[in-house]
Length: 379
Image (tube, rainbow, N blue to C red; front, side, top):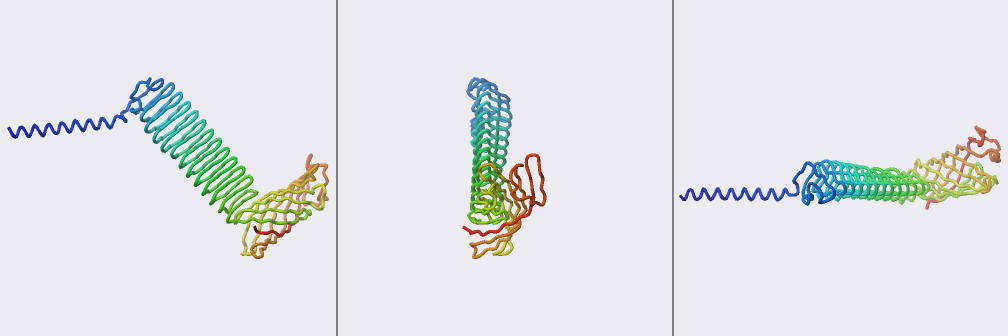
């Protein structure tokens, strides 16, 4: 009898444990129960009803809006889709896609994609994409905002990321670290950047590649800035005075890194009244020969006018030998190869002294050699 009692007790304990274990499994699976399809009008008017936030679906379609725990393949809503856990596959909504954790695949929304965790794949939004991090492509009509972007961010107005690979924006890009390229219609801002291309201004602390700006580059370290004005902390800034073969006397600001620099100048021509006022802009490159001596290669464009009728356009390639004195004062001189363009009917300010000349229907073009010499002071 005692033996039967202990056998019954052990059997009861095992059965109780089994029931308790099944209850635990069932309770933990409430948020992950799968349904093959979820179709509805607006939550909770759907095939999943009020249980929709606890169910996982392979296929979802809603006239207005839907809610689910997880989407595994495809989700389509007329206005919005809200996923409380993860979304895999394709999500399409007329206004909003909202994923509480991470998403993998593609999210397309007429206004906003909001992924609280990592977005892996592609996000396309008419207005904005916002995510904790992004691994793939973000394309938005207005803005992309994320902590880390591994891939491409492209926006009609602006991109913002802590760390980014490639950013392309109609107005501006902001990143703490940009590992590949920033391209913007107006401004790029980064702490550490590889390559920046902006229509107006680039700002960075350290640039390992090239900065290209329509007007100004600003950085602490940048050896290859391409812009008219380059404010580089470890670079050079020089104010100079020069005169060329046409008697154009220029005051010029040269600024840039250890290799590339920009040129911006203004001056007066004492020889030709028709081209007395001169503006100059261009780019240059330093080739170091020794501590005191170097070669400067420059390409510039000059506009010369009397500010009334005549305008002469001159382009020049220069090879300048430069010698520094006491690391502050630099003398330079060298030959130039020039192209002059002006309208027919204007005075020939070269008196027909050209290597080659072409009289077109409306314009006259000429090529000739010249020279330039000057002195500049390091700021």
